[in-house]
Length: 251
Image (cartoon, rainbow, N blue to C red; front, side, top):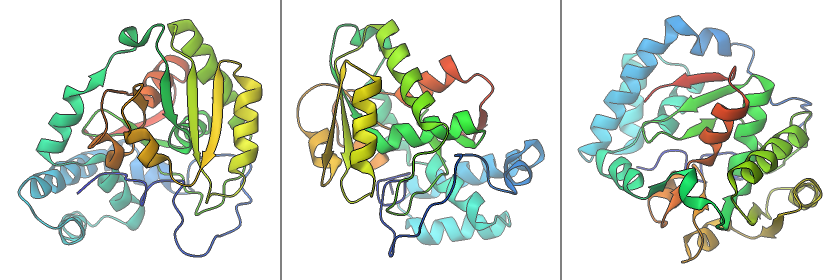
């Protein structure tokens, strides 16, 4: 079972769109309690147990319910476990194809747009950033088919452009999901902030990210399990630019 695939992560449409009135991509009202220090041992154990079950062929939904019930996790904690866990074979395959940033100097990359920007916005806004078993950083934000620019959006794009320039990576091709509202506005902002970037709104970025070509920057497990070389860009950027981020490592 994949972790944080496009069907589960921000950028996917879950039924009817819900208006998004947030001005920050910050933590939930109970996140300090649900993901603070005292809660983490149980969450890490749950993620390890869920990964163990997935590695042995257990069905994802029933395995997650079993583990979640055992540790008395609320829905938001179960979502975190889902996004952090992964079967052994999948995690090993992702690590084999992972590139370091030094290998990308002077090379173009393809960026899974919403996947990256929402994690950076969450990190800047004090929201939960999850450390997964495969080493990826993921968020708990959600857009439910409708994306809204927040206070952290432009700073997130600026720090990405600044760091990628410093690392010598580029040009950058951002791909954004057309079914998510305001994706065109975000694409325009990306092009305005990063002169070395293109930003394209497409029906579904996944098939384009899976085509042979430049390395891919994503934390979407559905892509990671099928793509070629990839860059753990969200984690690299958060560690370099947001050292005080609310990181919850369940690896």
